Each structure stands twice: as C-alpha cells, then as structure tokens.
Length: 258
Image (cartoon, rainbow, N blue to C red; front, side, top):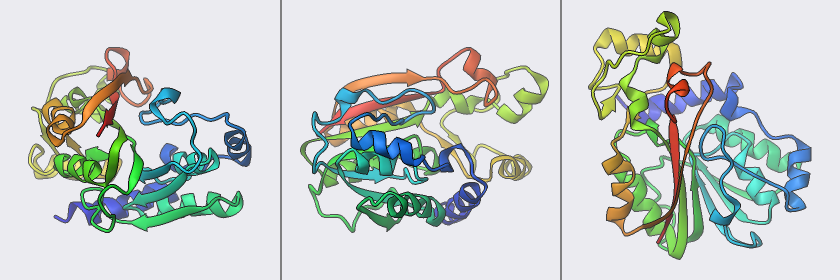
C-alpha cells in the first residue's frame, strides 16, 4: 500500500469536511499576530512557549512541515516570519493559500512528503515547525534527519507527536464500551499490527493510516541526528476524543536545537 498517497487523499477529504485541523483562522487572528499578539499549537491544546521561537520573528525563515490547514502557517507569516508551507495534502495547502490571499500574506507553498525535503538546500531554515503529524509515516527517523539537514547551525526544530501509549488502545471500541483496555503492542502500525478486518474498520472510522512510534525513535531519534533537546511539555486532548484523556497526556512536544 502506498501510505503517502493514501494519506494525501484521506487528508484532502478531512480538509474538505472541515475537521478541527482544517478550519482557517479568522482575519482578526491575523491582525493580532501582526501586532505581536499570537500563539500557535504543536499539540491539541497547549500553546507553544513563546521563548521557543526567536525573540523577534522579523525575517526568520521557517519551514512549516506537515502543518497546512490555514492555522499555524498564516499566523507565523503575520508575525513577521518568512514562511514556507510544506504539506502532503493539496487541500490543506489550499487552506493556507486562501488565508494568504485573504489577508495579503507572503507565503511559499510546496507539496511533498515530510520524509523527503530534498528540494531544499542544506542549512536553509532557522526554524522547522512540525505539529503532531508524524503519526502518518511508518518511520519517523527520516523526518528528523531531513529536519536536521535543512536547519542552519543554531536553528531549532519544534515538533509535536502522539504519546506512544495512545496507540495501545482501540479508541472507537472504548468510546462505546466506556472501558479502556490495552489491546495493541508497541510500536503500533495500521499495516502490521491490525488484522485486515480491523484495518478496514479503522479506515472507515478515521480514514488515515497511522503509526505509533517509540520514544526511542521520537526523542532518541532526534538526539541521534545531533539535536540537543532544550524544551519539552506534555498535552491533553478532549474527553470526547479519547477516554485516555482522563488518565494521561495524549501528546507531547519538544524543542530541539542543531
């Protein structure tokens, strides 16, 4: 199965349906960002600490990696950064383009896979902003390697990712039974962990192919590339999204410096 092509189509559908990650920000959000009042997320709820970014955003070159949808990308551009939006989904990029045109923002748009940033030269960016989207690739390590390559010395990778424990549970079943039961071993993969019938059911529920990576790959993988992790936090989601939310953070974020 071509994972990237499947997820491109799935995210195009999600974006067209107006999911939470595909609802563009309003003009007043952009106006406040232009005045220096802004905040964005790597995980479902918690704003990224402002000190994870450069003190001034003017002319900071940022690669927004797999973060289309008309939300984070235009806010960073309005805050003064020089932003490139790189996303697999045509429709997610279209949301960024719509906000850019509506609010007169200068943004570069590129479509591609997060594991392959070959079109960008070494040391091209000051910041890579990468929300919790690497659950859509089977192996996260190529993402870290490419991010390290395209960052300038002293540049930072801001990344969000799912808590690996999230993928131990069948969340659709839990929402019906109201019982959390450990079901799947880690690392998790829609392609290898599930039976054919389970995979078919999952795809009907959420559409995307997903993968739960180990902490060894999520955090250790950044360290192996040469990053120094200088910031970390965990985040919750919503009880309606998963019963796990009542017991554990469902995602986390890191700031890693080259």
